[in-house]
Length: 218
Image 1 (tube, rainbow, N blue to C red):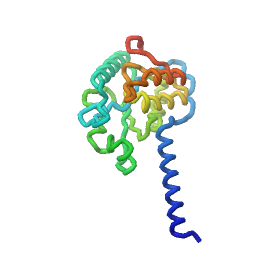
Image 2: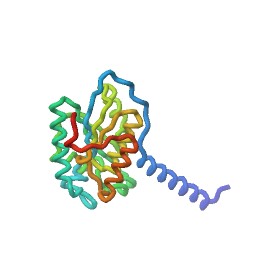
Image 3: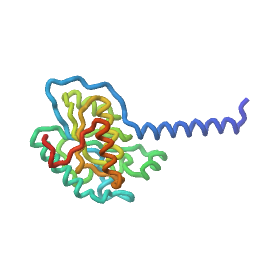
Image 4: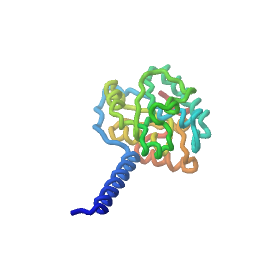
C-alpha cells in the first residue's frame, strides 16, 4: 500500500508535470488544417494585444512599452489605410481567468473583468471583429480561423505586441495553416529591444515576411 508520503509525492510530481505542460503549451504555436487555395487573395489586418495593461494607463513594470505612443499612432495609421481599402481589421485581446497561476504568470495583468484588459483607449476601433485568447497564439481561439476561412482571407498583416511573444506565436500559428503572413516591423514592439534584429531574422527564416510601413501597399 502506498504510504501517505508516497501518495503526496506522486501528487506533487503530477502537479509539477501539469504545470510544465501548461507552460510549454503557452509558449508554442498551435497547429490546424491548411486553408484551401482561393481564387482571389483577400487580406486582413490583425492587431494583437494593444491593451491598457500593456500600453496604457493601467500598465505597471515592465510595462508600458516606452514607445507605446509611436506604436499606437502607427497602428492607427494602418487602420485608416485598411479602412480605405475595405480590408477587414481584426482585434486580438489577451484575457485570462482569475486563477493563482494566471495571477503569477503576468503579475495580475489582463485578468478577465479588469479594466486593464480593455483595448488601449487611444487605439482606433472600427469593427466588431474582436477575438480573445488566453495563450500566446491568436489561433488558439478557433473562431479567428473560422472568420478568416468564411471570408476567404489568405493574407494577413500583423502588428501589435510582443514581437518575441504573441505576435511571433500568432504569425507561426498562421503559417502552420498556410496563411501568408506579413509582419509590419514599425508597428510591432518588444521588451527585448536589444534582440529585435535577431527576432525579425527568425521571422524571415520561418516564412514570415517583414516589412516597414513605408514599403506597405495594401
